Image (cartoon, rainbow, N blue to C red; front, side, top):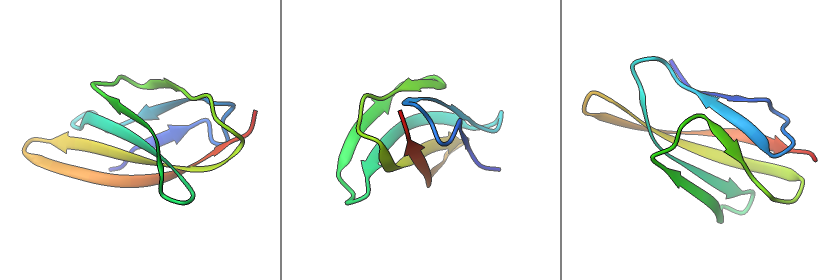
Length: 79
């Protein structure tokens, strides 16, 4: 089970869906050089970014029971 980032490509507005058992801890958006662009904590599933068109990576931090998982997904922004 993993997260789903959609729509992808996105116009800067996107969602993150998780399996029902997972709790979303935080989202970290990185540019292609690995610089942190945005950090969201205590988040829900709708996100908006004001940034240049291009490729970004979304690190999704989830918790299921006592296990914390870090998974990274590509996100293309095209406005």
